[in-house]
Image 1 (tube, rainbow, N blue to C red):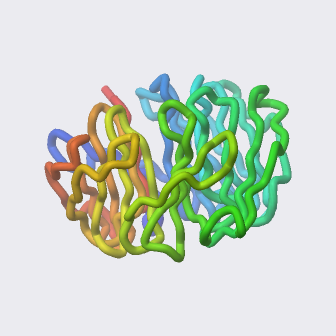
Image 2 (cartoon, rainbow, N blue to C red):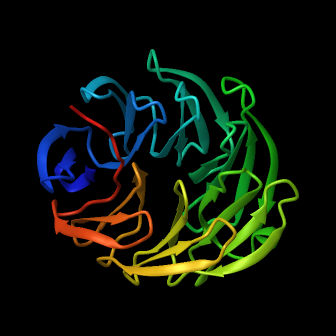
Length: 291
């Protein structure tokens, strides 16, 4: 879990529910991701302009890459071999080779490059240009080292100011959340058309897909909504206010609170297991199996 006010990555043991390790990070660590193969993690430190690669399960720093202006979001390719990072102020998508920790490609996609969705087959990205975005860029990643811009969605196509996005597990739909609407939209990933809206609570919302369900947070409301992949709402869980981001893995759902400093653990059905304060501010979380 990232604790940006402490410039640290915290390891929280989910059995004891205690912080068992603190790793110093470059200034302002905001986002953390683990890859599908379970051997790597990445921490994005926006103010320091750095992305830190870590080896799992030992959780050792492999390399800190400091060639960014203001990196924000990191996402691993499905193979786990590549890491995609959005660089906000430069408007770039940066591709990193995970094994050697080297920047392989920088592609200009548009100022404000922020949240992104990776299609499950790894061949496409949707990149949201800003936290209140009037544009989404579609990037072809069939060859991760040679990405290219395939298309763009503008404000007339989006139906609002976009914030976050995620592909459904079959890759046929993209759920887009907003910064100015109390609903989210389900897009056809091929035609780029909105198929239907879904109720989502106060913006901004974040969305992620687990093994069985979809999850949408409304941090300002302190709510986590659970949906079927088809969009049927199955339940609503209470979370501490400020719980925006999601970390999924092992049939668990984690959501840290940026304003309360809590970490909340839920079962994949949305039933809450526990919630406790672990830092002054907790922005993001990821699940890893450590010795």
